[in-house]
Structures are given as structure tokens and as C-alpha cells.
Image 1 (cartoon, rainbow over the protein chains, first blue to last red):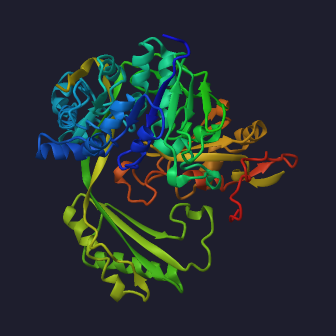
Image 2 (cartoon, chains in turn cyan, red):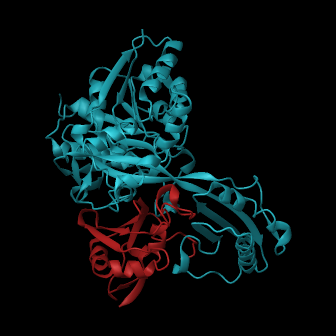
Amino acid sequence: MAADKVVRVANGQGFWGDSVDAPVRLIEEGPLDYLTLDYLAEVTMSIMQKLHRRDPSKGYATDFIELIRRTLPTLRKKGVKVIANAGGVNPEACRAALLDVARGQDARGLKIGSVTGDDILGRLDELVEAGAALTNLDDGRPFSEIHEKVLSANVYVGSFPVADALRQGADIVVTGRSTDPGLVLSPLIAEFGWSAGDWDLLAAGTVAGHIIECGAQCTGGNFSRWWEVEGLDRIGYPIIHASPDGSFVVTKHDGTGGMVTPETVGEQLVYEMGDPTGYITPDCVVDFTSIRLAQDGKDRVHVHGIAGREATDSYKVSISFLEGYKASGQLTVSGPDALAKARVCADALWGRLAFAGIGFEDTVTEFIGANTCHGDIIEVPDRLGEVVLRVGVKDADRGKVDRFGKELAPLVTSGPPGVTGFAGGRPKATEVLGYWPALLAKRHVTTNVHVEEVP
Amino acid sequence: MKKLPLYALAHARSGDKGDGSNVGVLAYDDAGYEILRDWLTPVRVKAHFAGIVCGNVERFEMPNLRALNFLLHDSLGGGGSASLKTDAQGKTHAMALLRIEVDVPDDYQPPAVGSQGATAPGGEL
């Protein structure tokens, strides 16, 4: 392998619900080797389990199938490979759906891979029997508290199984619950031949993944000095130009909006950061205090110096469980005296519910426009043109939550004047999903890689 | 000593982290980083977020990025989908922290920043 070999990896989907056009533009508007896409959030897995229970052929991100249908000819022409955690709780069904699309477009020879083994929902009893404690990682509570209420349980698997699929020639690889940075690390493992023991290199690939895993958040999105960012309407999503020595450049396609500087990249490095000296993934442990950033031409940031340590012997597990129900709704209250009138509305609403004998486990009352976000850090202006009253409740009793939803509309006619904005019907109860992080010894988990060719 | 808003010395980003949020503060120059390392203590950050942060505040130093990373525990009204708050993920906590007034030596001049300065042109600051 040449020392000057460069592998170009992009991220076109930072989270479930990100821009639908960003991945298409990444494929079409410039050169690329790999496109990574993140479709999963903590709550997504339980939604997919529910879909899967209703229909065993479902439980993956159908958006991804549509994206491939739309872009497959271009992907093949340009030789771009795709890695996505779109498999959800059913990566094999996702692979089958992709094969259908590929057959429909006569994409002979295309290889599609899937990685399974992360889903441990059906194995929980067996694992507990085998001695896995699954104690809550944040507060130490015993797993027995929620065992009966679990909706989904997935291990964050590492990057090597995806790299295996790529080495077997896969053009598209779908996984279930893999780590977000691992989507970017895996092609670097496959291309550069990195292996367990190359801790600094694995750490470097992980940092590359961390920087681009939230899409445009490193190319000018969410940047503190927002007024400097030009072309948000056509913001470029990030691309890594990686080298075999672990250094890489963060950039974006020429002609796209946004900006890539050590400041836009630096902000993303600290995003959702805990202890920076010990960023733990299934592949390695990264020391974020080792990272060096330097501008390397317009919209290019060179990243190097990254140090890593040996991976731990456990996987992180993400478990979701049904914690109850919630609903929220809002009314707009115009001035004069908007805030005072909004307070009267809120008092009336909670008073009426109390009079009806209904209380809740948790409630929220917010006056949006009057420091909902920043509280007492700044003063509320004397005169507000209008205020949005936002109220919400949470309770184990779905009926009570739905009853709350019926109390909002009457305020328009039975409260102070100038109250409006009640549209979209009564707020409905939705499930509150509890999140239970835990650790599981790696020996309990076997991942499987399956690559299939379009005949 | 004089007072400067943190905006003049640093930029920042926040997000959710378990039961709370994190705010990463990145100083614009070495002198500013030294000032913030001394002055921007967990105690001061906790006091700034009175009514928002219910738990303790932890701080980590990242000298390579001239950054301080703060963990604001129990600041989201329950994590993930359990929170009823508008800002259930602490997305606005960075902007809130940038409003804090920092004691700086009289002779400290913040560096020229970006193409148009450290605060929005024509903005409220």
C-alpha cells in the first residue's frame, strides 16, 4: 500500500430525520469512496422493535431503501460504497430489501452485506442466567427493576465486522446498533489493514468518525459565530480524507456552503463529550487531549497526533423500556400583558385538572419567549409582544395523560382574551421510553457477517 | 480587573450526556485559556445555571484545544425521551454559558476573532 494513499469517507446522515438530500448531494457533487449514514437514535430501536413485532419483515430504516433506489446507478458508476446502520433490529430484512431494489435495477454483481449479533432482546433471560448483571451504568440500579418492561436491547458492536464485509467485496453494508464513529472507522480498517493492537490508528479513525458523525455540525452548522457561515441553504456535509498513518483532513465538496475551520471542527470534537482522556468505543479507548488541529487551505482542517489505548473487554448495551406516557401542547398568548395572561392560563389549566382530581407524576409549564431556555441567566424584558404557553405531563396512566390533552382548547374561550394558536387537535399521549445503559462482557456476543451478490 | 462576557474569550457547543448536558468551551488564545482555567470553575458554572442544573458540575481540561469541558449533571429534567422540557437535550446550554461575565486582568485584550468579531454584527451584545 502506498503511504500517500487517501481514502475519502463522507457522512450524509447525522441522525434519524436528517436532510434527505444531503447524501444524494455528497454522491453527486464531488469525488468520494465511502458514504456513511446514521439512522439510529436511542429511541429508534424500540420503535423498530415495535414495527418488527407487528410484521417480522420490518424493523429497519425504510428511508435508506428509498435512498439506494434513487442513487444506485450513480453509486455504481462512481464506485462509491455505502455503510449504514439502517438495519435497525432487522439487518437481514434490510439486506433482502436492498437486493430486491438492486435486482429491479439489474445491478448484477453488486454485493450487499449485513452485520448481525447486536440485538440481544431475545437473549436477555439467557444472559442474566449466565451471570450478566446489566446494572444501570449511570446510577447502579439492578436490571431486575426493568427486566419485564424492556422494549429493545442492543449491543454497540465494533467496526471489524463491517470491515470484514467490505473485505469480502460488499458495496453496501448494513448493520444494526453499531457505534456512529465506527461507521467511518470500518472502511479505514478495511483499506489500510489496521488491526486490534494498532490503538493509535483505531483511535484516529474513531476521532474522524466522531467529527463527521453529526453531519453538518462540523461544517458550519450549530457554530457559535453563526453570522460568519455563508450558504447554509446549500451547506456541504463533511468528508474525511484519511491517510494510512492515521492523520486525516476534514473537508467538504467544492462549491458547497458552510465552512471547515479548526473552530467548527473543534466545537464538534467537544460535542457530547464526557472525560476527554477516556472516550471508550468497542474498538479502542481514545484520548481526546492528544488531538491536534491545523487549517490546511480553505475548508480543509488537518487532524493528527491522536493517541489511543487498548479496548476494554466489555460492550456497551443500550436498553429501552416503557416508562409511561407523556403529552404536551401549547397556546399563543398575545399582549398587552402577554406573560401575565399566560400565567393566568396556566394556573387555570392546572387548577381545573386538580379540581377534577387528576394529578401527574411530572408536569412542565413553560413560557416560551420569556427565558424557557436560559432561565434566570438573563432578565425577562418588560414588554413581550406575545408568549407561547407550553404545558406537558408525564404519568404511568395513559388515561390521565389523554385527559390532560382535553384541557387546553377550552382556555381559548374560558381564559383571558387574545389567546390563540390551538391547532392540530388535542395533544395525544405518547410513550415515554426509559433508557438503560449497561455493560456486557464481549465473550457473550458473536457478530455475524453475511455478504450476498446480486445474480 | 474588568469584566468581559465569555463570548469575547471563547466559543462553545453543548449537547446531552446521560442524565445531563455537556458544554465544551474553546478559548480563542492561550492567555484566554489561562484566564478561564483559573476563573471558570465548576462552582461558578453551577451558580450561573442556578435553577437549570440540579446536580453537580464536573470540569475536564483539554489544553490541546484550549478547551474546558463541563458536565452539568441533572440538568435536563430527565434524560432522553423522559424529559418534558423544550430543551430536553441541553442544546442551548452553550449559549447560556457564553453569557457569563468573566473577571479578566485590565491589560488583557481578547484577540481579533473571525471575519467580523466575536459578537454578531448589529446584534444585542
